[in-house]
Image 1 (spheres, rainbow, N blue to C red):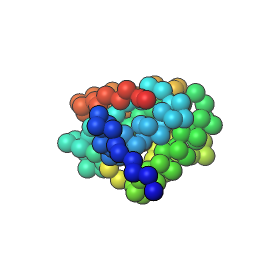
Image 2 (image 1 turned 180 degrees about the vertical axis):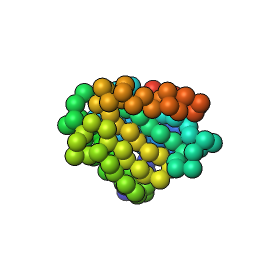
Image 3 (image 1 turned 45 degrees about the vertical axis):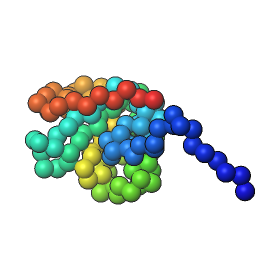
Image 4 (image 1 turned 120 degrees about the horizontal axis):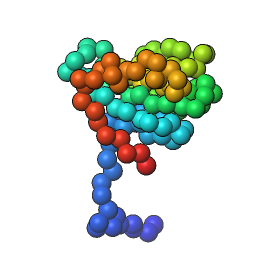
Amino acid sequence: MPITMKPANAEPMKELSSYEIVCAAADDKKAWNIAVLDIKDSSLMADYFVICSARNNRQTQSIADNIEEQMEKNGYPILHVEGYHEGKWILIDAGEVIAHVFVEQERQYYDLENLWADAPRIDYEGE
């Protein structure tokens, strides 16, 4: 059996946080304008909100499906999902992170970023 060695300059595998898993899953399905709000100091319901936009209802459902799949795959159970059938605003509660997947018109209307304006933002660059 051949022996394989890790290259000296290879970085160790980094474990992703819950919000990073949500962001990556949304990004994988072409969500755009992904925002992460750190709400742990101002809310008891979660530590993070991840908010993203989709072009239409089918894309919101595809993004939500991928978020659920990736979170469960990484050991984060999905506690509750709302709005899936309508697809305009899908809320996915995974405990410490709550994902909000919007069609853009709904996102502008509800303006969660402004509602939670005091919450610090966490940069997400995508892949």
